[in-house]
Length: 234
Image (cartoon, rainbow, N blue to C red; front, top):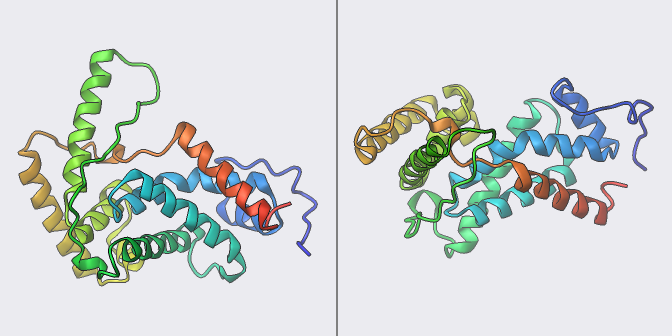
């Protein structure tokens, strides 16, 4: 029997709703809270997954499996860390398991990726001149390709630090490595990127591997439908 909250109907998930309140609402079976958490987490989880696997399609599969695992095991979340930190760790583990299945149980740190070229360009939100949009897309494609070509351990560290803006300590916690290793990997990643881009691109890393719009909504729809089928939501 799911607990009922009197204020569920009044809960309007959005920027002002704290994450703990959303998690509590999800525990009570509130679909709107599930959708809001997914909306907030989609960009990070997609980038994290894309930092490990070699295509957008694989990253979406990892995301969906991550959400389903997290929501199905929500009672195991004890709030010692934030929900975002907890589910990010699940995403990393899910992506690594995906690699092991797809790459014949090869250890993650020794995986050699043979094809990292399938990076899709997505339209930028808002209105701007066509020339600006084209230039922005070309630069983003160049940066995405350079990041995708990094060795897997360097790529994920770079995405967590530079794209997601995690601190060195938070990155170390998510990857379960020490801070010195994070700094070393980040330093090596920057050197490789600088060589790859040949000083042509500076910054702009916050725009790579976007996950928004229709894809964001579709992810929420698929997760909610599966949760309802498994009776985690009513």
